[in-house]
Length: 294
Length: 307
Image (cartoon, rainbow over all chains, first blue to last red):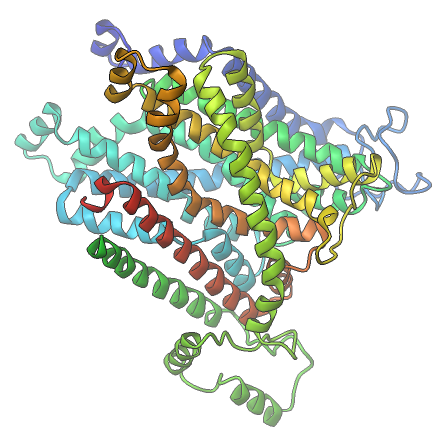
């Protein structure tokens, strides 16, 4: 990779050590990484720390809607049904993170396989495979995911499958570009000369060499998926009761904002912080792993 | 140029047919018929209903009929809003959605491009860092968070603008929806313009202009500006798609009677024909805009059309 010393080019893990040094030197990215870590920890531990359960109605309150308070243990207040918002926000974050990770994994697997195959094989196969990507790219896919939820009902699995299945396009394009360059390299020629079949060359020589780029774009895919899921949930087409998600909480909060603004502000703040931190981290990773793009 | 235009046009047709086919067959693959949710009907009435909507025909015939209807702008009746056709609902909502979207696009262009130029000219200065941080926030923070927070701040606490609602011709009702829609576009445009300007400023013809001793202002206006704005033109296609998607949220939050609200209502009520018709409508709109952008781009930049 450009910008690295000769020694680090020669060693096996040079890129990664190099990238780590660059990433640690980027203060905004480090801060973002710490914030992401804290939010993930809060999402995992929050519901355990609070004395309340996700769908437990606190009948001791009167009225049921309580503003944030340290005394009664509702640190973010309660929603209109008297349920603890602190627990609901972090449980919602868990759902958002889970959907994001699964959908990103689906899109990475499809995108890398498609892009590496097209790029390595090149020629007419490449042309057709990329034509498919171009056509799918032109689809307004938010609307297609909405059709899917109308047809098959609303479920968590459907959402992450649908997002993952359309999210692979960018990944395929990027990986394909890299693979096109890689197939000209000597070590690939050597592998061909040795008689390795194409699928082995793709798996052993092409894919490992595009991993840096894949990591960067996977990191940038995660906040996009979170956004997508929250968008659907906000419109009432995503996650359904008894589960909740950040988008759903924002939608519920927006209905009550005149009397109980904390119901809007708590999930909004967590969602905004999570998305901002992930985007900053992704930008930092891109600068670290792929200096030419920065 | 004509050949280029024809090639682009031919490229759009399979995409359009794919969209229509995907929407149509997905709807037909849905478990259960559209009338299952209501009380059980006598078989004769059910058969009449099926016949009235053409559902007793083979799927391929139904698809053919749908395509034929499309050819003269007939998107079929709405299953849930019994007295309306899909085309009527779109016709009602379109002026609102279109007005808000166009205003947001103009606002975004008027604010985003100057901000990007400013950031690019003062690269790594404080103005650059400020603009880019705000831009990242504008991209990262979703409009369904921005919309209610703005309504809370300017509508409820400050009382400057109406919280929600719509009166035809009332500018005060347009401000918050338009600003909400424009914000992410401002952010994208600022980033895009900045990156493009930085790239252009490094090209040889700018170096030549500098070497000739031209005034920096003249270099910017006469030489750098046009190539800098080329990527902005190609961004207008995705921007239109983003505006349409954003209008789903904005119309919901601010209670505007636009196309997006019918679409979301249709999706929540599982109104098959309405959702399908609207997807076809949105898709053709986006395809048409993309095609237009491609043509303009090819006209502005000869390198593209000779590719």
